[in-house]
Figure 1: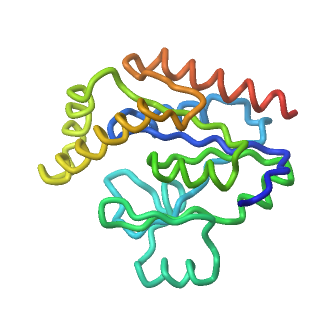
Figure 2: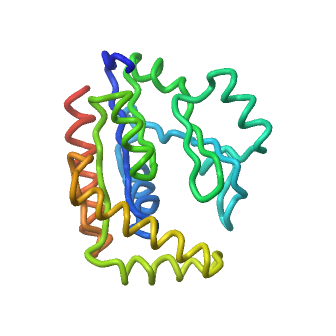
Length: 198
């Protein structure tokens, strides 16, 4: 376990697929005062970019061979495999947090659990919806996935929601039925911690 004597915070955003975690996080990042020391963790992945995703901004997209080489060089703080693709988070965030920089990372619930074990003082935020039917609609609206992918994501989403309800991992929970209300709620959480650390 990494001893957390950091000056900065790690905000862990976790949610089932389709709950709006990326859109809400982007809103917060674009709305917060630029003077607040906060950066988004750029995760490295072996999956292909989706429409509109930019390499080095949304993710670092690399081959499986490159990923395994980086893993062997201890480049990653943690790695996970989701839907057949590998994801890794840079270990350098630990050094930067000690210098006072805060980070936000978007991960699935399994990833959130890993990060929480590494950095117990991390701020964990669970974003969800009231029902799975709405999740299904949102996933299907993306239009870039096969029915098999949609079914797999829904199955995982249901599992994650049950686990979080039975054994809450996150210290904050936001119901994203209304985007504007959820965005303001998430923004308030970030401001509370970041202003306290300044």
